[in-house]
Image (cartoon, rainbow, N blue to C red; front, side, top):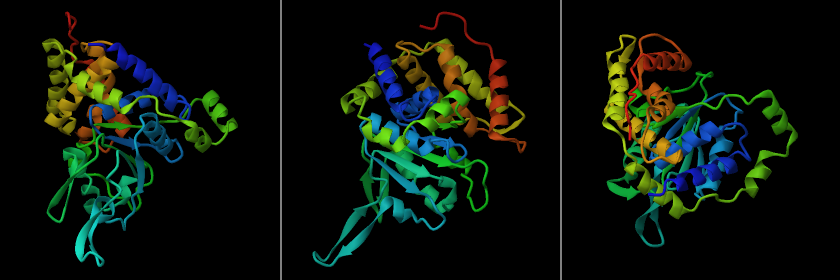
Length: 315
């Protein structure tokens, strides 16, 4: 198996997206990892850090259709999934698809919609289908959801329940650029103009091949045991109300495989697990304290640091 193809495609995707979003190569790589694993991403950060622009750049880079949905309190589930309407000309009901019927969905400020509307995403995210009036419609392939939320302003918002958070493959933030990077960005032309010039960096055939190949990456029993040591420790830790679910353990396994493939390897090493673990696991843990997400992430990092790393041959 040629895993060198993964490295070349990752470089092309990262370089293309970085023309629009500067200094966030690691986040682009993580989003690509979630996309390849058929997962979804929750991006939490303050307004104006480039969340929307990042996803639009990623969509153009992989040559997929993208639709943005602004979540508001008056948004209804049918506004996402679509409705059956009566066609007076034909005398029959016809299905009019909603904006979820696309390849990449940007659910902007998802926590501003009511829980009923938020839950309309669950079937599409988990099962790749939508049910309307008893009829099931499959989603397009590939199907990828990136939801955003503002971590500061909580007035008029509806926090995502734990069951829905668990549906997200990763939770990420962008953060601010460095001073030098930001100086370069404010002096250049509008990002929209740069976005319009982007062309796909990978083909649908290459994406399909990568999705087929990365699950064949070998995971040594010692490394798989290391993953389970981390997962089980979150369930034993007194500071956490609940630990990582089985869905989270599967996500950690698959994300580690994709990370190894991106590095051109056909086997997973402990460093691959450590790279993705905070982003895959942290939002799946409920802490007893009222600490912030960053505090919980730091505590998880310290917990993982106390777990012995397998040092034997991992191939």
